[in-house]
Length: 111
Length: 113
Image (cartoon, rainbow over all chains, first blue to last red; front, side):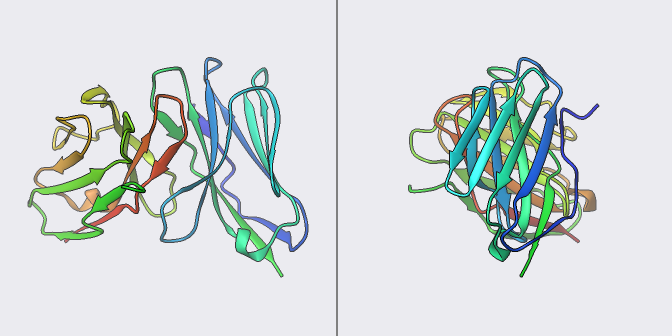
């Protein structure tokens, strides 16, 4: 079982809609959780970090963490065409270990 | 520097040639990660350092791959006797401490011909 799982997509939403991206991880001891955005031909860019159960909001982005169910999600409100990218979930599986990435979910926002 | 810097940005190597890829992390960042990213895939973990100590190299695909960070700052990923399957983007990231937010460099695109 892969340690960090994401649906590859593509996820297609119309402009102005809410995009919901999901990620599950295998290790209950995981400590830190991150969402990165990657445009084609560019390197990953950090957009959200979350460390404790619940929601964390930053502008149009909300990260949600549920450690009991071992999932983390990212909601993008009022989606814009410029949000079209691949979204990568990354997890520190246990304290002192490396950051492991999922394969990413491709989001397409149509105008 | 202001961000993570990688060089070269692009490298074309003939099969069998040795290459060295450099990563200059954000000043003061103790953790440094190397990843390999194939087209359409997420970054695959290669190795990571805490200061000069290489704490995990489980992701290095073969003994042709070697990484070092001798003074706990700049890191070099070396690939010996390159093969076509080594063609990928190699990404470096650094973070202020273990578990903290990690920031990526621009990557090095390696093409083995």
